[in-house]
Length: 247
Image (cartoon, rainbow, N blue to C red; front, side, top):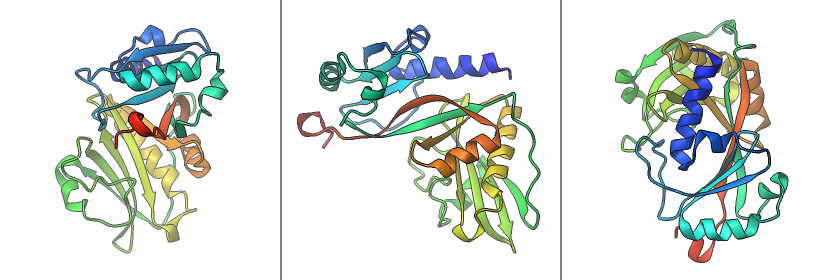
């Protein structure tokens, strides 16, 4: 997979999700593009309430996709605002950084010594769904629309101490999640496992995505060390009240 092919997959998927165009995603820097949300076929299967909102930028235009009531309200609030002011609005309480492999810096990393590593394919993952301590990596709800498709484990004395997962956002995009038990952190396990799973996903001609909140510096360091680069930013937690809330 080339960098161009990777970006083509991601931009087309985001355009489906947001009900915009790839050209919108690459529009004029700092411009706002407002679109009414649609439940388009092929969108990533994130759960949505009756009212939906997402604000996303890949570094140029800011796409605001929302259901009608929220779209009207947010459009009024963002008129005349800058990029920085937009992401500091009171209806956004946190945002996510989304990373893609940096082919200029991605390389195989050496595995930390004294641990045993194992790859778990989709058909065997259900056996681990009740495993405690790995909520970021393991999807415990078998009915959730986004499920794990591939896992890599690190073990010590036959005990699972770290898990990195890939979950299917779409047929061509898999999202990574990593958990390391507290007593085994700072051994390089998170970076190694994320790097190893990333390379395996690329080998299968699928785009791996690493996401973390803007305040999680430790997770962002893992992304850089594992060979990732930041590509887009989107809201993570929302604070809509009254008739604009989903409650």
